[in-house]
Image (tube, rainbow, N blue to C red; front, side, top):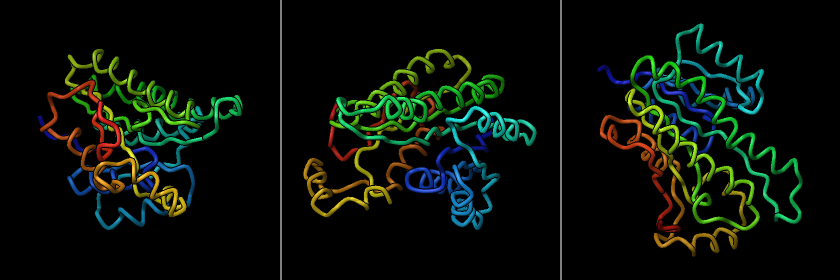
Length: 246
């Protein structure tokens, strides 16, 4: 079988998502990347246009059914259903449970769990017809370790891992694998907003003594997308520097 050619990466305009899109482009995939704003699409073009591998940049809010339908219509009409799907887009709304508002719970569930169900359900049909696919969902170390102030985020990411294992059983007979990558603390624009004391306290919990780079998370994703990982499915690959050891 010919190697897969199209990789769809959600939340691809910055941070881990951009690192994944850049790595997969370097590995020879044509990239369909999504972002939630025009500025995000501009950032995606700026990063990937020179590679010649950016097939399309889609403005997509994964929590909005109309936005999702429009993006999927584009995938269909332009023949861009992916062989590799990277569900990376997500959000946080941190708060202690007793202070957490219903909206903070619902928004995180919608972005981090329901959206993955919605997009994967649409993309997997083409994979099953082709008898080939790679689905890789980005979760988090907190799905396993927990984290105070993140009951919504931890629950959503743990739900993604359960979703992934169940789907892996459903589609394995069509040569479609489903795995998750669970990063720990990653050096991104979000973590750079932490104070020096906050960063030091977090790094003190990591046996390797540093944050991960986005490229290190992208390398794990690239491996699971590759032919070398063709016998791995239903697995969570932790990239956390020893912060949590299952």
